[in-house]
Amino acid sequence: MMTKMKKISAVFLALLLVFFLSSCNASVTQNGTTQASDASVTADAANAAFSDGDNKDVTGETPNAEITLSGAEGTISDTTRGSSGSVVTVTSKGIYRVTGSAENVTIEINDANKSGNVYLVLDGVTITNNTSPCILVSNADKVIIETVGSNSLTNANTDQNASADGAIYSEDDLTLFGTGSLNVTSSLHGVVCENDLKITGGTLGIDAGLIGLKSGDSVRVGGGSIIIKAQHDGIQVKNDEKSGYFLIENGVLTVNAGYDGISADAGFSAAEGTLTITAGGGSENVKNDSVSQKGIKCNDLAVAGGFINVSSPDDAVNCKYFAIAGGNLTLSSSDDGIHADSAIAVSGGEICVAKSYEGFEAETIAIAGGNIRIYASDDGVNAAGGSDTSSQEKTPWQSGDSSTGSFSVSGGNLYVNADGDGLDTNGSFTVSGGTVIVEGPTDNGNGALDKGDGASCTAQITGGTVLALGSEGMAINFDSGSQCSALVRLSGGEGTTITVDDGSGFTFTTSKSFSTVVYSSPDLAKGKTYTITAGGVGASIDFSKGLYYSDVPAMR
Image (cartoon, rainbow, N blue to C red; front, top):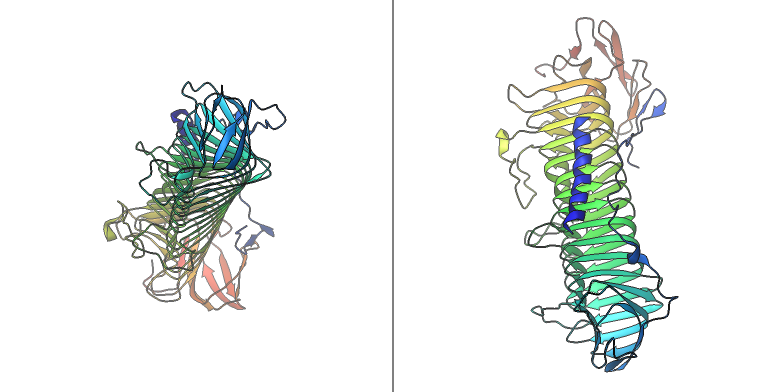
């Protein structure tokens, strides 16, 4: 377990290092082409996470024993491999085919010698148990449950103090696989595994009164179609060492949870697959301060591929470190789209924060590639911008006006539509590449661009293109030492087309009103005069005396 956890962490840290060293497209064109991301970093976070035995089809092989369920008991055909009764016990490795239906019967795997894999083939099985798990793994090397046809397990036990509190409960490694379906209904947890829980195929449906999938070490999804409905967390990975992690390599996973969608102590990794999460009824609901209703909650989060769609009243993503090199994320939240206690790093992929209080929030935010689109009712991007009045918890760096942070863009496309500050940092921000479009506030209490007030806080642009639209009250330009940058009074409303005669072919059509424009591009040159046009009205920008131009008094 620890070896694989270290591998997942190493993948994440490699992604993060590249970001700092080095489809949600806005309607921006330059030189007649749409800007595209270059995801130069890829990661197979799932490498070595699955073994051949996890998806081995044994239905064509002769079983070592047959287990037949009927009424209130089950019968095993080979008593040298186990025993019959209300508890059918399997005591050695092998293939066991299970058929029939029963009430208050438990199939228990108790291989004290842990002699090898136990394959439990469920072929049209129905088990209802009011007091104990339907399937209990007490001792085993590994158990692989393979489904054929339609199968159903129901645990009606409501005793939350029960030591084995799931419809399926395993003390050791467990894999769910098959060509059939398995429907799990439980008054408590759906499937509980104290070690590694893997799902590599088949159709799995879980309806749980508490947690859908609960694991002590890891939950790894490598295939199949999974639908989880849970009153508490959809998926929870938790242990005393806080090293539990979640991984999706393939498959389709849908989670509808009353509390957190996926909660993992340590890491969350996505390589491929489709993940849809609705937590706490979705982003149309107001956050419940008494419980956690986040979409994804973990320490390290790394996305290299796949499709992730999250809707939640609390943060859609809440972690310490967030890194994405590929894949597609669509996030909707009544709080933050992505909240990271330490850092957010983007080098590729597609991110659309369709609804948020604040879009991105972290101490350090670095964008090196990808396509990002953010809609926020407060700040679009907040790099340590002070305490978030919408959040339940405060992070260590949130200390009001004295907090520091950094925000940088070196590549990719970023579009922000914010009612508060568009790009906000209490420290400095830099742009050295990429394309940034900000449609900022219409009131004078916020700015499209906002940096810290300290003497060391700077706003620098040395490459890339920036268009920032907003109100006049707190408008700022980039600082001296930057490439040519202009701040002008120029107003318009929804549907206004903005162009610049700098030869770049830049054009943008607005979705809201504005009264100031900041524009900077490598195509602007010292010693020349240009015109920014908004809806047919032009404003002249004159760089004959320097690289900086402003016709808005008292603005920096």
